[in-house]
Amino acid sequence: MRESFTLRAPIVITLPYFFYGEAVILRSLWTAGAEIIHIRKPDATEDELDRLICELQSLGCDMSCFTLHYNTRLAETYSLGGIHLKGEELLHIDQSINKRLSFSAHSWDEVRKYADVTDYCFFSPLFDSVSKKGYKGQNLNPDTIHDELETVPYCSVVGLSGITSHNIWKVRTLGFDGAAAIGSVWGPSAKTALTPYLSETLTRFRALRIKWQGAVNGKLQLISNGDIDVAENFLAGGGRWIQLRMKDAPKEQIEEQGHEMRILCRQYGATLIVDDDPYIAKNIGAEGVHLGKNDMSPTEARKIVGDDAIIGATANTFDDIKNLSLQPIDYIGLGPYRFTTTKKNLSPILGLEGYQNIIKEMRLAGIDIPVVAIGGITVEDIPSIINTGVYGIAASGAISGADDVKQETEKFLSHIK
Image (spheres, rainbow, N blue to C red):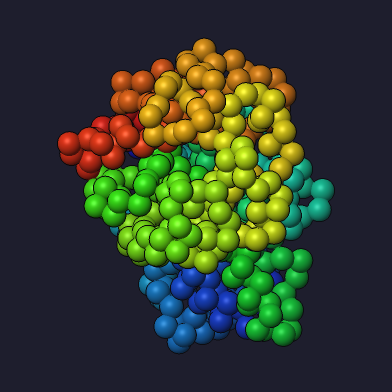
């Protein structure tokens, strides 16, 4: 079992050059949830770096969120949180320095060589670069990557290069502990008009953050009928994804319950998804919407909720998945696993063999959308279902109907892990 830590938000790396209003935008990214920001200016003088960091300090930034590349003195002077060094430099650094240590690697041998003297490393290139033309990504074999990651027990591995809101979930399904972005945050180029550029940058970062948190949170999903007590106990037990599913309830009631659920989810850093209706999802500020087979198409829903929202869709067969793969979705709810009384008009039951066959067909077809299993699943079912290759588990009655919801949630999570 790996003992690395999982980052709660994507790491932001600065552009290699300075531009007007950069400190203001970096501060705004911090307030928008960027927990770690790398200051990487390969051609900058120490005086130029000093001015930028001094401005960040004067703007009231939490300096511990910043990691500086290749300048230990300035990192210590301004009490920055981290230092990014070359691998060989890590072997000679003063071990009494109480800062995050990171480095960059392009091979698994490099990762393993310095893993035990660092907190995390950037592994690249994953995908074709957004900011560097011609910088091609690797041929990503999920089985190979999982095997390689298991040989790096103590260092968190952060995927880098070409990561966008459309593929960031894949970074997590591959097993990486974090994702880092440059071009997909900053866009084509920094502009002289600060206000519109700030807005565009924050929108891009928000999309990355919501999708990454969804990928982290989505291993266990509670299908909720709106019961706040159940939801709170689920969250207290470690659950971090709630899908609000109030079938046949009036829109006003769903919105009222949704607002309350959203406030609760924000307190726990959890993801809230609304069933069926993208308009309600947008109105209450939920992170996304889940669409049934007879609901609005994902393409139409995307126009309503925007690129920064999570869209899930229900499937029962491989043909369903093949059709959905052409739509702008982030994950698939595949089921039912067995008979369940919590859903009307139940599709044909899949069972374990059904999941095995469909996941195999997806791999042969090159479809790598994360799959969440749903439908009458109990704790005892989890190991065998996860071994089919599904990404996560969705549950309703097995958790909400338990005598101790918090304890049952903890059991589900421990079996998933």
